[in-house]
Image (cartoon, rainbow, N blue to C red; front, side):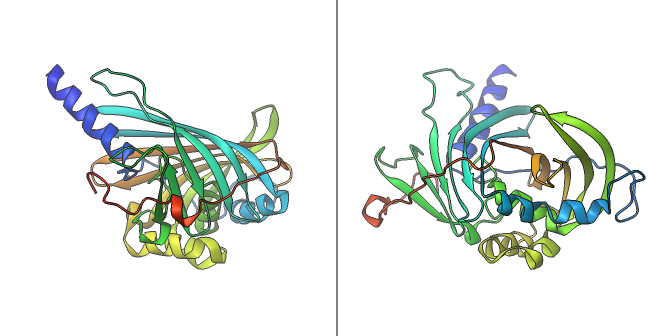
Length: 274
């Protein structure tokens, strides 16, 4: 039994390491009317749908991400930290993969660059030289880079809220020292894709067309007094794995000096396991 558990753990970790995470959704509460929520400041659904606009207005932010995946009785967590420019739709993250359940030396963090049409990964392993980047077109992914890299693109996550259809206002809380308003709901991928910005429309549209997460994404959103996302937790469904993605945003207005790799630095060979 222990050997089977280790095999399952290694398989789950390998999926994360090559950037093809399987994901899933948790349960949402009973049915609620669209835009309901007594005591909410304004219409809860509209507040959530507009949160991406307020992030763009803020310009940039620091971010921490956490992706918890459960599959075959094994649970692993992938953590990331970095910065994101919402106006240029560019971000840079260091993503820490879970340790191999069988032991061995710790894995090197994966450097990820997120742009409006591609995901770049360095120190990815799978036969890719350490000094080379791997480029993945986000519209080619079944999830639109919501889970593939182990760190959800912060703007894609916020743009997904444009498809919020069932939203309730939970109440006031504190996140990272800031007063926030807590909302709970379900987002529709197809609606979000149609309403999203040009840079995210292709990826979210592809995810909706490929039936990612069944087209519905339960979420918990925490917005500050300016309508900006401070914390966002989303649950996805793919195959037999469950994934909960959490994004924390803070330090708004931080300088972001992301530079995308030159063509000569991008790996053109075959990736092991792909």
